Length: 232
Image (cartoon, rainbow, N blue to C red; front, side, top):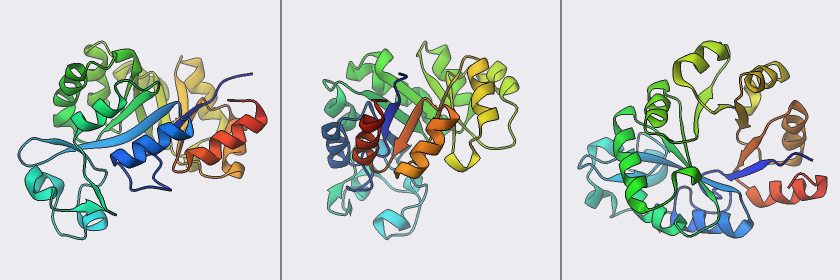
């Protein structure tokens, strides 16, 4: 039986405030193989866990993360939870038996993200850097990280992308996933992950296509379903 990697999306954001320490801790308690979160940088150069470029959806204020200082953003919470720094998240994860999936949202932050990871003491083997940007994954591989993954959309020439960035995995959104893409990625030596899988119907469909990893807002549901199919 093949093992499917279960990734907690922004922690366990279906249950808890996304990209917060609470969400990360609860995902670990649920038994995930990996925890994913997003990283952006504030105006004064602090790396924080935050998905959106703009602040309105989560903080109900105008502006961009890049236009605000860290101290300013600390005045606000996401459903009662503070916005953590990358350093704080890594300290929580340092002694946990899970992989750390970091989505680097901005190309000019990748070096600083990797420097922060290395200072944290977390083994490179546990860290998966993911991004929409090819240049980020190229930099990750240059820094001798074992795992870098690219989000892909249709149409995509996987062979060309593989030659350019040397990713270890591709991450198509579930509605862009098909058997042809999975088989081509596997033939090139890449794993395939998909997102966001939140129910048994979608899980079974992507399992039938042969994916290796699934990210979920409700990782507890996915873990239960996989245990029933003996794929966990």
